[in-house]
Image (cartoon, rainbow, N blue to C red; front, top):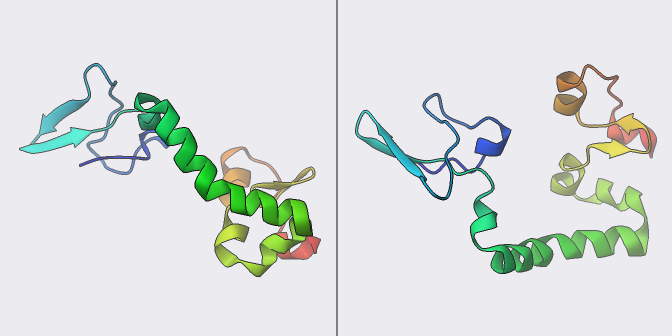
Length: 106
């Protein structure tokens, strides 16, 4: 199992954070790799990859304004805040903050 969400608590009951120095462990014959901040092992490559996938979204906002996120459901799901409004329900719930529906702000 490679748990890429270990930084957020992990996806599996048997997940526990490990390090690059001691990255794997086994439970019930299943090898687990749960290194927090996996991209840190390859900083240049991970920076280039992150830039390549996020830059088009940043340019879309820069050229068309933040409301352009409503045109792309996947993009809209990635928005956590608009101004001082929390528009991501899990974030609002996790921090006991008021939730505002993103579509109500356009």
